Image (cartoon, rainbow, N blue to C red; front, side, top):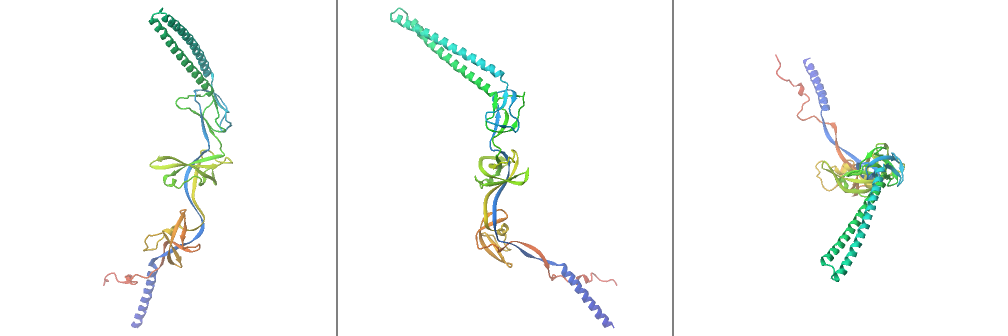
Length: 395
């Protein structure tokens, strides 16, 4: 009977040990690498540079005043369509009319002085001739002959001085007339008024710099985007490159343009050097407005039917491989084969393969990931370890 009980206890012990081993085995796992692949495809690759810019009119003119005065009347307002020569503003003319009359009077007086000096010159020359005749007859002392000659030279100088005063008076008259004309401010170009900075009755002062009264845009159907590009990107920009941009006011619409100018003047802000790029953009429906912020994408390269692989495929290297010439690893049912390639254009996501024994539809490795699989128990572990006594039993 005792023998049977021992057998039953032994069988129970084996059963419990098997259960513990199965539980222990299910709790311990080991990680093995899994290969992530992607197909070789054909498609478009577009290399682009992104930036932000500001919209402005193709032609913009600031209209100021060269004279000081009070605004008497206005001939244009915001958004007014104006033609070249059209009245924009009129300054008070009364003071300038007075200056013109005064300058004319000064000119008349200077011309009269010239006539007076010319008469005096003729008189001095006549006296000199008479003195020379008397001197030859020894009827006049030499000193009086010399005095007559000096009088002629003095009269000639007075004539030249008076003529100079006439020229000065004439120039002063011309200046006052020009100032009078400048009280009438007209449009220098055909366009639209973007800004009006004065009102009737306001006094404007033209000192060292002419104040801006109006800003005119030549033609809003032709706009420009002035974008700032980092010096690291400016070497890839050239005139004629296509540009796509969006504005916040029309989030669902993409506008097109073309690079027209790369300005050579650098701008440095916090040790960052940028250059201004001018982009011509048509605006036939007048949707775009000056001052809008444009999110610009400049296309610097395009391949429409390129053999391409994911950019990560060129960075992938199996464990133990060192970097070398550009290559990708073709995967054939998990077997990796290195394929030397010559990469071309890249958009950051895909890279063009210019040369290499690859074909569309083949599979290349791009990275390795980890997946958990069942693992065998450690050789140092025992499924019955927890059943071993932890210390001597108390008797």
